[in-house]
Length: 147
Length: 139
Figure 1: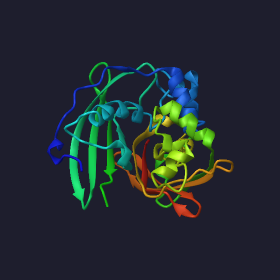
Figure 2: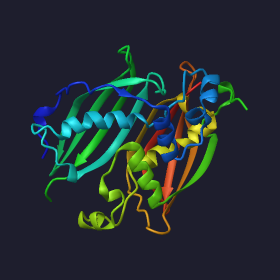
Figure 3: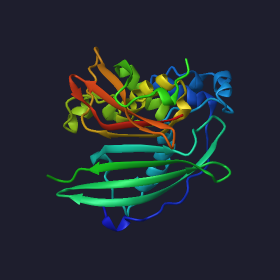
Figure 4: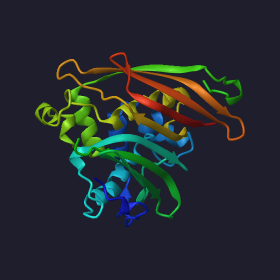
């Protein structure tokens, strides 16, 4: 059972993550993209970006770094082996591009209890080096309890 | 071919893609994303936690499905908002893999914001595996 008292808890910002061009290509390949702006610098620049654009779900890589701090927090008491991903959303103020240096700040938006199960919603705000918001990632995990 | 926002209509189909997810796809996604949960590549671990087999990462299904909208608009940077619910697992057979069929159609248009919401349907084994899969495309 997840500790309901962590609702509203904010976790410290993660160390900056530098988005590499090859990492973007690797991730794009893994999600089976063949979009030129994911791979080709010239295509990305022709579309108005400074470098290759990350796929719409790439922000999960940053979200995971924040999530790791929560899973390691004894106060939250989340048993990762019982976790199922319930839903996920990415709201982009602008796309992530190679060269971005991103930090993330996670807040536990809600903790709900459904019988033996818990549903925890995390809101992770991802900022660039100028501290402008790039993406808000919202993730709900279902933590299965004892039946 | 440039798509004109004013030509779009709700209900219009935007595309269909078929993805073969193999165990190789899962290992590649694990490496690219950093999600090394072993239920995505080890049959014994999947079985020990009561799963019907090795499952595709939900985030792989989510990431592949949106390519229908990305290909349609021709630029991965124009997906302003994308959400899904994970409703059913995708079990990936060790030799045959799993075939995921994704179709997209326009679910809503916002003339003021100049955005089109693409509603995605992702089907594996005749079953929808994503719920409320919506990608908002910026024009």
